[in-house]
Amino acid sequence: MMTRAVIAGLGTYAPSKVLTNQDLERIVDTNDEWILTRTGIRERHIAAPDETTTDMAVRAAQLACAEAGITADQLDFIIVATNTPDTLFPSTAARLQARLTSSPVPGFDLQAGCTGLIYALAMGSTLIQNGTCRRILVVGADKLSSITDYQDRTTAVLFGDGAGALVLEAETNTEFGILASYLKADGRGGDLLSLPAGGSRLPASEDTVRDRQHFLKMNGNETFRFAVKAMPEAVEEGLRAAGLTLDAMDLLVPHQANLRIIDAAVRRFNLDPDRVVVNIERYGNTSVATIPLALEDARQDGRLKSGNIVVLVAFGAGLTWGSNVLRWGR
Ligand code: ACO
Image 1 (cartoon, rainbow, N blue to C red):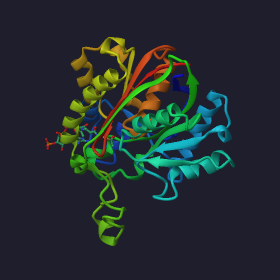
Image 2 (image 1 turned 30 degrees about the horizontal axis):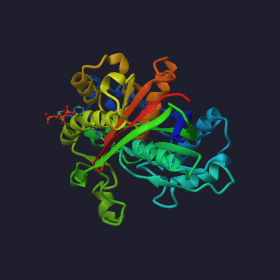
Image 3 (image 1 turned 60 degrees about the vertical axis):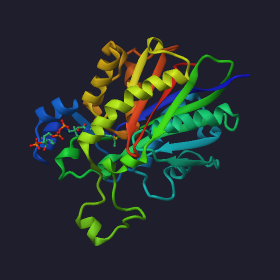
């Protein structure tokens, strides 16, 4: 009997504080017009100084579990995709477990840049399909403001904070759920997008702090070039792995890094813009949280319907890229 991971619950969270382009004009040498035309971003949500990645994950996870009609002690596993764990260890997954339940639910953090949520859904789906787990909490949570250099205008304008969570549940003989995934990495491009210090390569020192090496560094142009190739490839190959073609795709939910990268994919596939979810305007790039936040918006505006074939696609640090193809609903 065919077992699949269906999405039983979705929850999202964005911090209440909003940082607008006008606010950024007062922090770095930039302007609303540049940011809007080059990236499509108007504003982003920024976590409070004492609000952690785990805090945001808890809020999203509680909503996802409530929608799935389960309590956290019924989970078999927790996978947290993040690039900004509260600490290198213990893991965010362990911190989240302790906040959600007294039951000893195992879990780990998964770090695959902005493709982390795609990787996590693929891993969760595999653990369910092979019978290891029945219910898995998959979370994407990032506090990018904690590694953003607000003296560097080329990156300061791009990023925001947020979290999203999905409860995956085993179902047999179903047409719904995660149908296929496509995952790739090419570490040769690692230097295009990295957090240089704070790991074993460059442990924290007075020098690393002085040289601002604890902030995210990005080669924007090269990352852009990589993204416009990687996204269409992942969409096509994900659909192929599911035995589907582009015509079958009802909704494309792309990682929200830059509106121009999404537009390039829309043009490449000649898609009706209504079939592509875009909300970068209000959230900026929240890394692993962009896709859940976009799914939630699509659900609220009525575009995400039960039975839809949905393609989730992302690219990010690593370099990594990939997609999940699923039939929404259960
Ligand atoms: N405000 C005003 N001017 C700026 C700003 C700013 N915030 N940032 C850069 N500029 C200037 C540059 O200095 C440059 O000036 P110059 O021509 O005098 O040298 C000019 O604007 C053009 O700069 P470019 O870098 O060529 O601008 P581009 O159109 O390529 O846009 C951007 C830059 C937005 C970073 C783009 O390259 C991009 O989006 N890249 C992909 C980034 C991405 O997807 N990252 C995420 C991947 S994974 C993850 O999410 C962590």
